[in-house]
Amino acid sequence: MKKAVLLLFLSSIAVLGGVEIEEGPHSLSAKLGEEVLWTYHYDPAEGKPYFHPLSSTDGTPFTALRPKDHPWHRGLWFSWKFINGVNYWEEVWNTGVPREGYTRLLSTTKRISKSKAVQIDQVLDYAPGKDAAPIMTETRTISVSAPDAEGVYMVDWSCTFTALEKDVLLDRTPLPGEPDGKAHGGYAGLSVRMNKEVGARGEFVNRDGLKGMDTRRAAAAWEWFSVADGDTLLFMDHPDNLNHPAKWFVSTKMPYFSPAVIHDGPYTIKAGETLALKYRILIAPGALSAEAAEQFWQEWK
Image (cartoon, rainbow, N blue to C red; front, side, top):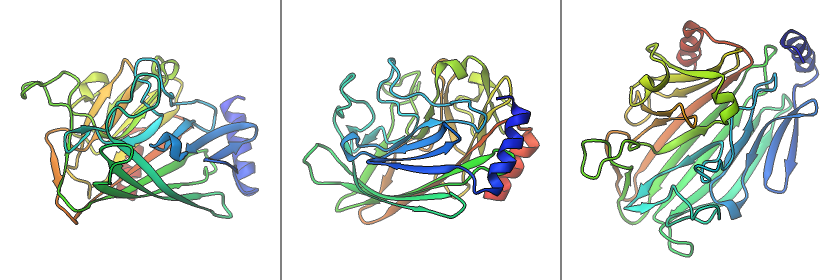
């Protein structure tokens, strides 16, 4: 469907109530006609919940699920790297079984408004083994707007982590120049893994106008990935977040990007204390100017 026709179609369906929401046994999806716009998966057996697909309203799918090079990458998802020295990121290759630490989903509740906006509230915990006692809990709220008349919609992702009886040390693979540092060091947190097809047609640009791999390790309040024919995924870091503006971990080869909240060093949550983070992802069926992206961020913050 050509974009001009689709936008006219979107204007019509917005008046009629927007997308349709479908609920599965462990998932929630938004459908635009016969196409799935997004699906949020929350099967406790999988551990970490995630969005896949995450697509623009004109049909461009941004995300990849469990690609061969990194099968623990899950579309749009959240994962810590190390907690108290235990690896929560990787899995045993092609099994879905955590290598060490377990992110465990305890509960999910959902609310769907008349406009078909969605709110998902979840409780998770983190444990150094499958049957181990938790060391940290998380409360998570995800809100997904209905597309507006121009086909733009947003995902708001808020999470609060609470250390339990003991301090919790959040860490990442060390940076180049640090002891045992790696060229790929620094990543952890909310991330988007995109598929190679869309990656071959687009480019990363940050708030300061840096592009591609020049955005890697650069601090910025927002960064987008825009496809050559227009569709854009704008990722925003909130000013209240730890270490704002985030330094971004970017790979143009995968492609992948993330506001790496502990990029420069580990962070300790004291026993009984919390760490709160919030992000917004805006998906647009067209190109954004830097001025428009800045306005979206200013209005949100």
